[in-house]
Figure 1 (cartoon, rainbow, N blue to C red):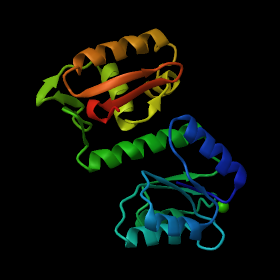
Figure 2 (figure 1 turned 135 degrees about the vertical axis):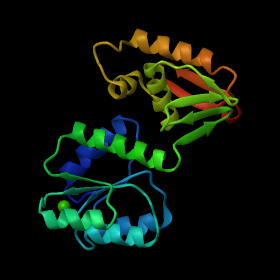
Figure 3 (figure 1 turned 120 degrees about the horizontal axis):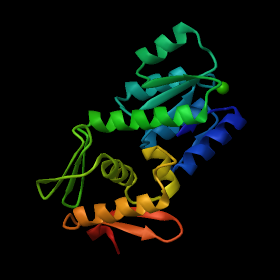
Figure 4 (figure 1 turned 60 degrees about the horizontal axis):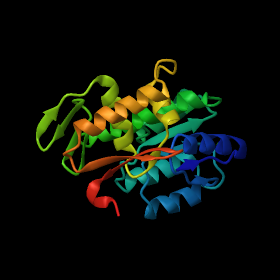
Length: 221
Ligand code: CA
């Protein structure tokens, strides 16, 4: 969820997030955000503080009073120490002061998402595949499998977005080292991963022209 009343910022932010594979709801008012957060679960909220109606700090306070641990990244034009302290006291996970670089914001979002997963134990299980994020280990049917750091990172991206198509460009962006990670290299990692997890009840499908999709075999119609 992106809560931002500045249309230009909301637009560039939501476009960037969608480009990197997120599903985004954009809201321009604190009250709308507050009521949607009552009924919907989000992986992350990017929350502006200066909003018409209900301000961002109140949205955050209400969310935490409902015992919701949804990660919140606060955006603010006000770089006053007091606001930062208030936000952090109210349970914001991170801060960005406007104007900010989109790339920086996306990096923070990735870090928050990872922390949230690690905090929940960091284990993702799909089929017989158990992915231990914090320990950076992968088990198939309780047996540890050997993955190179690159293979691990590619699998991590696919798992964090399981059920959604991930493009090669997104993999390049997240694994880093643009120049080194060619399309051919990604294809090779995918090929190796498929062999290493072939008994896991998990399939990495090629969606021609779009990218890759990780699914549990029994979810495939
Ligand atoms: Ca604002």
